[in-house]
Image (tube, rainbow, N blue to C red; front, top):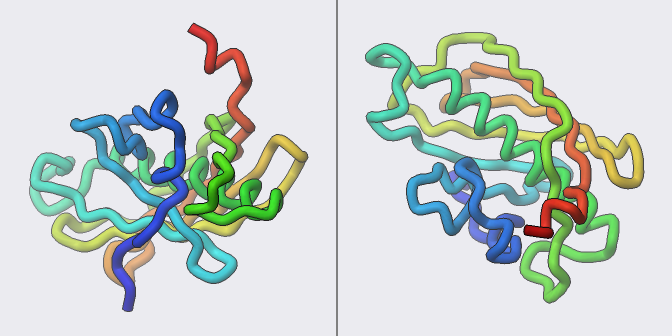
Length: 160
């Protein structure tokens, strides 16, 4: 079983937009979530550290929410990039998304010490708006579900 993402959509985000605490490759203190295709679904793997606990033995729910959030927006970027005829690693810069809504449901406590796997199913709901259903597993146990609606990042985010 594959447990890592070799090439992620976040690898192609321009430097100005690669600072997200969840998925920004340039944020030294961040989680560095990395999202890629796994067939027609998307996947992100993450192994929480000892500082990501709620109580001993269990992962902090805020980390799970961040994983759902960044996996969702990364999945949106993958889907629109593919719709535009590109894949991660192509010379074309991928679209960047921001979160319009985030919903997380905690199904079971997430045990610490397990590899987390976020799996996404993407649905286009508007040319600039996409919805992703996310399931988060700790090893093979479903621990959380979520839904992210992402919108293409407004051009005003690029102005300083």
